[in-house]
Length: 127
Image (tube, rainbow, N blue to C red):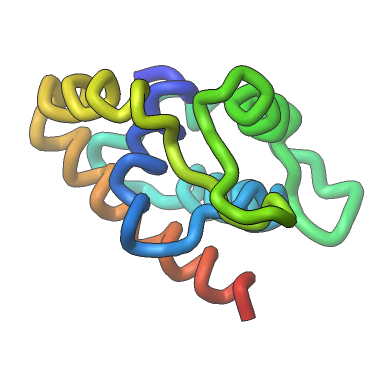
């Protein structure tokens, strides 16, 4: 599973459970934590994912670029006037649901684990 599919599926599973923001610190810390976890089903892109520690938190240029592209191309739409909350555009949701249904159980279990960690990170940063 490539980075793009993983991010989309993660957002699909998070929608309705938490407020999704594009706070880069939160996303980068989440993916850094996931990269360090040794859990079955982890997508191969995590092995190649690089993080810079030049600032207060680890940053993956690839992840940050991808998240910015999602909002620029309308895959993510804001639900707040200050651009603090986002959701998947309605026309992309059925596509992601089909991708999720096609995954094997190991990949689904890893995504479930990623959802739990994401909820921790987003809740922590929302305070």
